[in-house]
Length: 302
Ligand SMILES: [Zn+2]
Image (cartoon, rainbow, N blue to C red):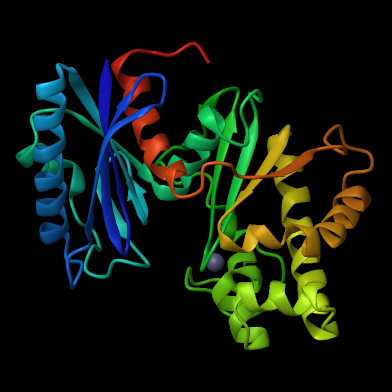
């Protein structure tokens, strides 16, 4: 048994045939069409799936379901994409019906951070934990929450938007319409705006002992620690997994983050919550999309 998995991004459309144990059997990657308009992108998904299904057929692999990860806000009951920060032109796009027009196999969908949370929980940094929180620290901040082995979806599929928890109510305006969200304070874009340096540069400068870079990481760790302590209070999680480019600087922002957790969770059962780095890299979203499809095709034990 295998499933089709897709990870649609601002730069690439990736597709794979994934076995039920998570092994990627076949993979294809094409650039996201210029303009990134929905119909053009779905046509690429269709083309990629044609190539993959052909390869699966030749190998005698049966593919019954598909999963798709998408960088945007999905409204599950209506089957539409409300908005995608990276893909303009997708506002209120009826993705479920457009996929149904093109494919005979059923699709499961989630936003990319939720897919990454599923992937890391299944095969990555949160393996062995029934309750985990994933944060991707990249150009933005995405999140996903696994409770008792299941992805937390909420009433409309909008749960787990962890980048938009408010840290400073009067802070800088965020793309979501609010102010002082975690994302606008600690994302790669935001660090660049605040310091003039990319995450990589800030890391290199910190390594060389540059004081302002070390302070920037300290401040970032503090904000992140405040956010993580709130997630622990709400979800009582066992482990927080950090993915994305910025997470590689954990040794610089980790101490400040730890101090916040220690202070804010001292009377809470999660006071020793584990904080770890993600393990699947770019494959987290693709494997999470596969897991979505596998869960639908046959309910899994763990
Ligand atoms: Zn926000």
